[in-house]
Length: 412
Ligand SMILES: Cc1cc2nc3c(=O)[nH]c(=O)nc-3n(C[C@H](O)[C@H](O)[C@H](O)COP(=O)(O)OP(=O)(O)OC[C@H]3O[C@@H](n4cnc5c(N)ncnc54)[C@H](O)[C@@H]3O)c2cc1C
Image 1: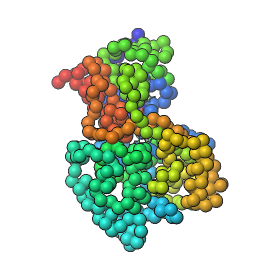
Image 2: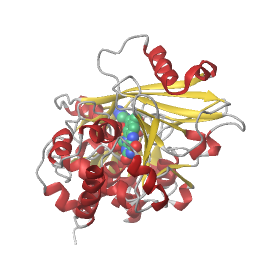
Image 3: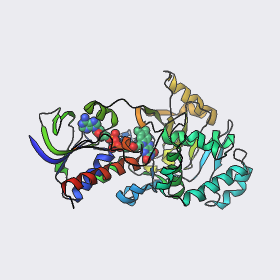
Image 4: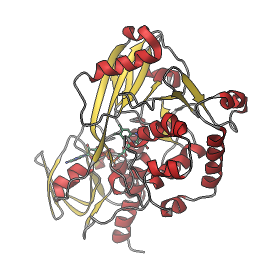
């Protein structure tokens, strides 16, 4: 039987971030991951020269934990343009921050989708968020995101064409019943930083965390099948005895191992298409609020030219299906693309698609603090589901949980 001070179960961002903390404090740990690579939900596949992340994922440079734990420069960031392109039933209109891009001002003022009043409200919110800390935001009244938009007085157009598809894409929640606090937190991060994709895809983030760890402390291709107090059984013949367990799995696994009740999850489907004649070359996110199958898409190659073979372009399309998804779904996606770009879509080729049934936790209430409700004597839980379904949430939960265990092992 192997012995360790801390057994970390799961090598997603939370488990890796916890391991990094143990490494820093010279704590003896063993990270056990069921897949052959670490990263969990942050996976990138390479298919015939195309680099496809499993689901559209971006890193926000203003996430407080990203500033603390990652080296953005070493990820070789490729940035989105600030702003978005909004579909208004017959063309895409640009929205951007006129204070950042004054040259866009005349165009924005003629843009029929957002009123002057909407721009004024966006500006006022920006000022107000600038003066609020994350703690202020998570102490604010908790309503739904949908109600927040109405309370802030945004016009129907601004909500339909911009705010709703934008935040549906962030939370993968079609109904926008996600907590208004999370909405304000993300809004602040989008305003104060940039959105990027690492040059080698989203899996570069867990790889960077892994590079800080001793490879001898990582056991891959090993699934935990049972935990009895602090004795861990795996699907290989390895058994592990640990003083502390840091369970950093997804919620479904934690709930199976520990008999927790089920939780509702948001799902998403992500299609990747290849074309050699892209209808658009810019680095904006495209949003469609018409609630067709497509919620948002972007030209991946325009943002990161390393994502596709030379002369080819990769488009990433995100759909947030309701439970009534039909088998004709891909046909509907192509039809919607045709309404934007016409018959040239007939020449697009599907590279791959990912359907992720349990992408993000349902988050109607958010307190911004780690949920330690499930922790018992020597068993601690971390992972995005313990605080917030994001890179920020996973990194924060891993680091904080490790700190709690370290305080038990090395009391000051
Ligand atoms: C489609 C999609 C889009 C997203 N977009 C964004 C975005 O744009 N921006 C953002 O900030 N966040 C985004 N996120 C959220 C972010 O990716 C996650 O919050 C984060 O990666 C979760 O990390 P985690 O460590 O908590 O969990 P996970 O990544 O789920 O890690 C759990 C790990 O445990 C392992 N494991 C499970 N069971 C066992 C077992 N029995 N034995 C051993 N190992 C086990 C798994 O293999 C996995 O490696 C997105 C997520 C998805 C799915």
